[in-house]
Length: 142
Image 1: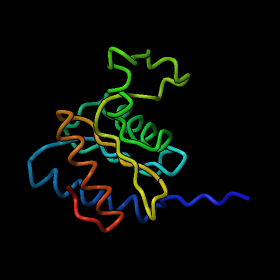
Image 2: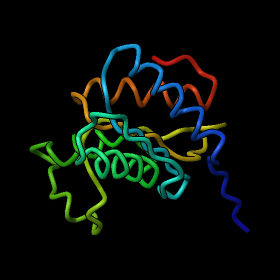
Image 3: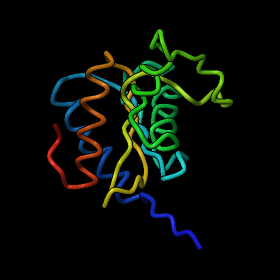
Image 4: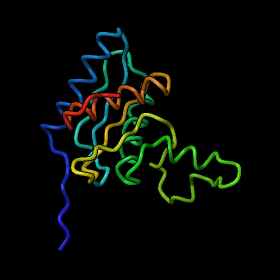
C-alpha cells in the first residue's frame, strides 16, 4: 500500500503569507498558487493589480512542479534544448508549462506539493516561489 504525504491548508497559508509579505515589501503584485502532492490547487491568492492571465499561469506552474517533481523551468529548458527538444504538447495535458516560477516542496526528500508564482519577470517569480517553499519547510530561502 502506498502512502502519500501532501501539503494541507495550514502549509499553503504559510507560503502565501510569506510571499505576500515580500510582494508588499517590494510594492509589487502577483498571483500565488499552492498545490498538493498531485498538483491540485489548495490555495490561490491574486493580489490587487496582478495580471489576470497569471491566475492560470501560477496554478499551472504549481501543477507542473508537483506532477514532474522538479521546477517548472526545468521542463521548459528540456523542451527548448536543441538536441533533446520536444513539443510541450507531448505531455498530453495543457496544464504543463515550462516557465520558471513553479517549485516542488520537498519534505524528507518526498515531494509533498508545490508553489507557483506568476505575474512578474521569470527570475522574480522563481525567487518568490522559493520564499514560499522555504516558509513551508522552515529552510532558508536561497
